[in-house]
Length: 184
Length: 315
Image 1 (spheres, rainbow over the protein chains, first blue to last red):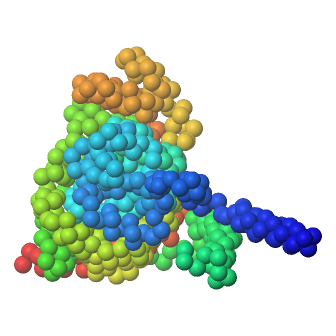
Image 2: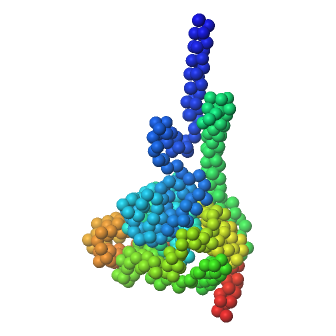
Image 3: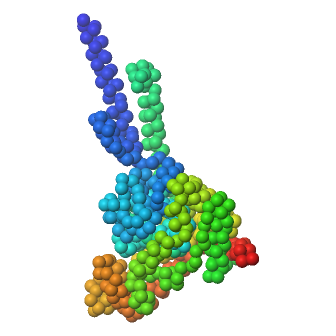
């Protein structure tokens, strides 16, 4: 009996150690995977919560975006991940970025704001006399400005390098845009 | 799920941990190598290290007429490329002169301000012209599949291949494929170098504006200007604040504010701004003279080819 108890205790300890092993491994998870990490508790609770993870490759984004009916794209995350909006026309206030020829995920174009959200942007416009897109920090065409020619993109503002012409860092700061002649 | 409890089940989990640990090590390394490479490729290196050897061909930028020919030739080559792939493309006309004027610091043209205020009418006019543009209408009328094919043929199937590290910061990228790239490759020869140098040079504009707006001389010149617009009923400290204040005042309010801004700029702010813009422009051109020279060299080299393309069109 004693021997059996000892074996059982040993087994329980082993089980506790094994159970502890995955927990001990979790601090090693890298910081950049934070969004994925936060999604885990919802999974454990068994809730089928929809969690947006950044897209893994630019190609994924290119295919999804090109199929949509819009030509200047703004994405919530780097490398075209997360929520997005797409415009063939101007949007003077991204708090309410709707208007003609606007599209995007989850009804972007109605009462769905995209103000101070964009982290990657892409001008996949049509050939035009006015195919450069100018982004501003303010609504109604105010504030610092940045410009993208047709075909160009910025993939990741979170790196902190890109800035508007008034020095404002680009990440999560675009509040309006309009099409114009050229960027030079 | 079926193999749970068997010895083999542990293997994938261990592999996953290995991947995560590897990522944990690799990501900071990748990040530090990017930041490490940064200063050398922009502000730190250019002027001091390369200055001693004088440029053998100190060619300035191409003339406005040559630039017009370059733009026209690129349009023609792009159209030919699109036509070859079964699409249509209409060539546009250069925009009106008023639309080409921009006032990044302060509106200092009273006549322009009377006509356009801060230019909201021009933005609206461009929007209307965009929507009625034959290219836009043609593409909007295509099926989603054909539209996707059109954009891939024009801008490249995958937005990869060209890269420019901008003096102001970020990395701008574009596809090296598609008709735009093909047209530019035929004109300029070295597409990667032309993309890189022309994007760097274009980016200097924004950098120059940022430096002017941060210059103490600009701030000093703003004080009398702000006093002048205050006398005209606008209690603001900067042109930017004045623009923001007219957001809801309508067209007449916008024009009144812009005219006040332009009138008050005549007392010194306009002249100071022009001088600062020229000085910071010269300094940036000197600091990035390699990219400026590369862009100019490639454009000068492209002019004869562009002229041949334009001449062939006229025949």
